[in-house]
Length: 321
Image (cartoon, rainbow, N blue to C red):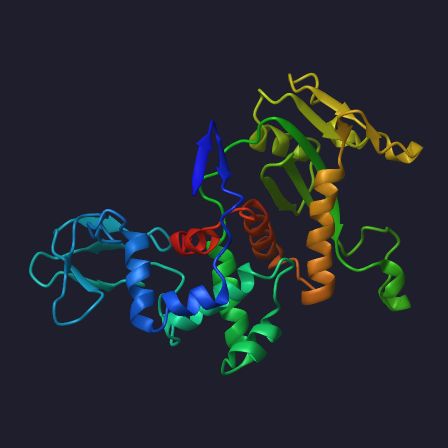
């Protein structure tokens, strides 16, 4: 059970997330998974064409396949190609069309089981572990499944953070002293990737990778993800946030270089606990994360953290697929 209060969603703490036994009972076969996905895609029962958005019809001879004969044209977002749902032949699609499950050779029930494993592991589960547990054909297959699911975890309905907010940045990558002498750089951050994040206390977290930090990159991130009506924006003494007070944010900071970590309500312990969770997951489970795929791992850890009290977290990820 969920309750919406303002812009925040409060979950019923007495309701537990789906257990393995409940999952196996709800999804005993592939048909039950397709029926569940259909309900999540079209909750009002009206099937809409993923190409043109008009009403489509079921094909009685083929379960979970549909037909659209609207005659309308639409543009493919990725390629810009013009597509038409012809009135004569129509456009046929299935329940997995335009989802992360499209063009897969694996049954939908395998995808559902991988999602359950990824969601129930607090610090994530590596593709190697998924491969060993599920018995996929190869490690590359498990890696493909996991990355497609991580892409579906991206929050497309973001609401700005409110209340007391903390902002901080961290670096993802190995220590220079652990590298071979010929590969060590002169700077401590060389070879690492910067990640910036903001978190509402007892609320959600938002983070993103920074490739090239400019003069106002960090402050621009704060303006995007934090509401101007917050009661506090707490940071450390980093110079990136020096103009927040001038822009109207109630900004205050702690000076870590002077061993100051908490001063009343001002601290960054909450966002640092999330950084610890992220790094423990990378070090303990994934061991190494490349810069190319780091945003997908940030999607995973952010989604799992923001839905940590959500009893319908499995339903939420299926709806996002």
